[in-house]
Image (cartoon, rainbow, N blue to C red; front, side, top):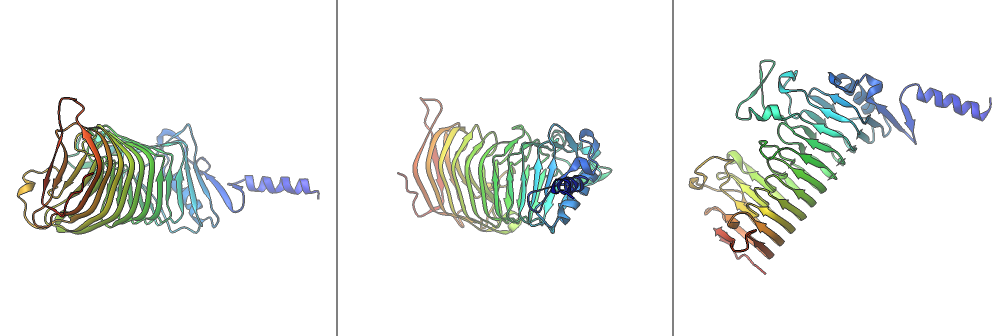
Length: 393
């Protein structure tokens, strides 16, 4: 048999199911596993069927969600551990959530990846949480098939070490758009995250219990924190983020319900805050304990930011009379603000509202130039319970 004929036969055998490229890499297309992609019919089973095939592949498979199609998914868990050495999920199409009344079960998050090592999620596609119907009832629980459900986050990663997430557009999550929990060595880049300014608690990214996370080159505008760094997060680098609208880049909140919570080695640089409610923010509850330390915000551009620099150790998530609370709070220390330039919409541009019982320590300010957008008006600062000196230059 000629070598040409053998090659043709091998190609036909491989092409009869999933298509293998390179060495040990197979491409699995959700359309080949029953997905319709019309945005109306439920494609959940097809996605799970494709995922199970990918997870059992012992090579480095690729899961493809093709472009110019819309896939409706119920709450879906993409679970590991997998036999694959790495998995690449390539999203070119649009994935949408059902309306709240059409959810078949409560789930948080809506799309969940767990215990998948060396996971790559990338593409030019969109993940749309269809959140507006949830927001109208955000003070209440939503009912799904007569079961009380809290508003879900849209996309979650839990225990996914060596994660790479890039390129996608994330729109209108019911709550936070992206949750990173218990992940080590993650890179998040080139994302666009969008929700209206009035949408409640629609954080761009929530990071918790994770370390060595690099976030860069993202454009985020939501109704809450663009990025929130929460408990047990260490060595987080954030670079070149355009934030606005939203509540800035926040450390915390920490110490809720008397908890011991810690954050360390958080470095934010080359970021901009445009028409945000806050800029560089650290927030802790009274009654809690722990620390937020070794934190830096450097080379920050401000454009009519309402509260450009703030440490609030009396945070209480919108409740009143927090200042009258007594007790400890997670301590904020070794915090550097360097190279802030731009305008503050509020007369008070800098606020250090630190607790008398614990205070804030070793706060350094260098080359901070914040002015009013109105030439005839001035901006100022408010400071309380600072240990050691603030060092302006």
